[in-house]
Length: 487
Image 1 (cartoon, rainbow, N blue to C red):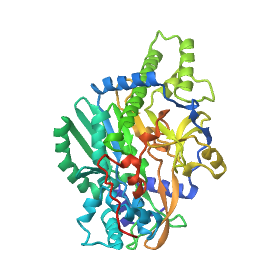
Image 2: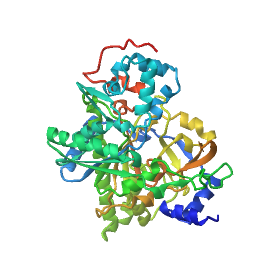
Image 3: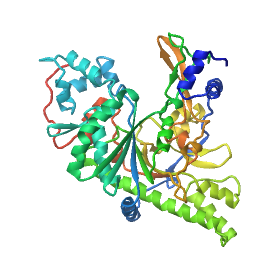
Image 4: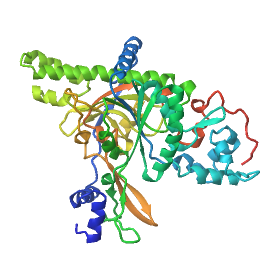
């Protein structure tokens, strides 16, 4: 497509090329293929289940490993709380009534009162909740009350970091934020980090990054031609959390935990979270070391090729969950082994919307374990999705170094044929937007993957505001007084 000089300048300012933009336009026209799911991953058929003695050993191994290796806790935190408060924005709903009738039990109540008029009406409360928090990142909203102090999710992640993600005496945490909220995150961190360092005798190394503009995608109108803003400029949009693979790729670490900003709980209920994070990491370390040993055997001139081939085949198919369509050469086995590795916690499916673990057939015919979102599944395969036993809580531990202790280039392991297109609007006009491969879907499609069952107590997200009234978000200081306000 021909672009004007103004367009070309705008494309360059985004760090994009004309070739990349034209490829995006082709993707709009052609769409993305659905994932060829074979069946859900189930207990003992793709998902490892708890083994108390072995798991205790794995947790201990990780604790020893963390003393001498760099651990980073990676927290995607750019999302605003718009969906969390969408029911309040809709007016008189059951959620709104529940919020008003329990308003004094929310940890943000003390903060909210600072902007409320004297003797506030229900309308005052709802309008001020929306204006104060509706466009605020979840990470900065008070979630949990501890005496006279309310902690935000950012602070709860700092607390988690001390308990399972410390490298010796240092806690490395990386938050990804949106540019417009970066200053607010930095202000909070500058205030609270010194307090927590003094209280827990640790050193925090907190890093913040933003999604790279070069990962944005062009928007199109309903005819798949570039969408124009009112001033005639092109519209580029963030391409979803999959773009964060570049942020992840810039981290220098031996092991990285990934967990969403809103999936946190209180001090009193964090025991399972701590234990299973260490278990997942211990499993990764064990499997990773086995992979390194096998690669060294392949590279050894003394290797017994016939016996080693059988060992490699058994390991790849039983431990890494890759069902091969053909016999492989030694070099092909080596290529499979020499990839980033992730161990993913999976919780029992209780009807939550979202992705899960599946056996998937790739373009080469091989079947492997993948996290698949509902939007990637063809309508005729929805019955397979509905039989899924597990749900993806975004609970990952990642090994990003190879057998020579060199970092992998994570951008080379993305399945660029995954993604999806959705309908949006801007300035009263319809448009089509593209999201690239999700961070734990297509962006990690070519990693080695292991799924492990973790208890539901480790998955405590806040999707709607009333989730904060659940037991997972109460503390021993939680207010017992019921509000007398009527909706």
